[in-house]
Length: 83
Image 1 (tube, rainbow, N blue to C red):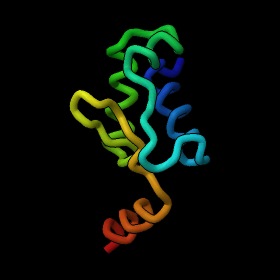
Image 2 (tube, rainbow, N blue to C red):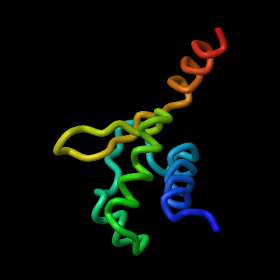
Image 3 (cartoon, rainbow, N blue to C red):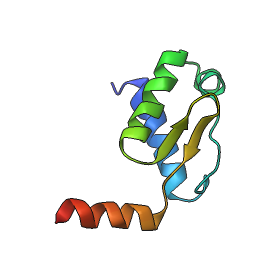
């Protein structure tokens, strides 16, 4: 069975890539995300950490999580890592 944080991560990643959340949009707080998915705040935090590590979102202290993904930013990343 897939861990809950991975399910949340995949759902958010898909919504970001498909444009439901656009560059600069603020994502739901950890508490709201946890309530929506009926998981702990720690589980929601873990999902956000994965999104941050992969460059889809950016954490801003005391402000929340914001989408940092754009097709252009991912293209630049792929070019740098391929070199």
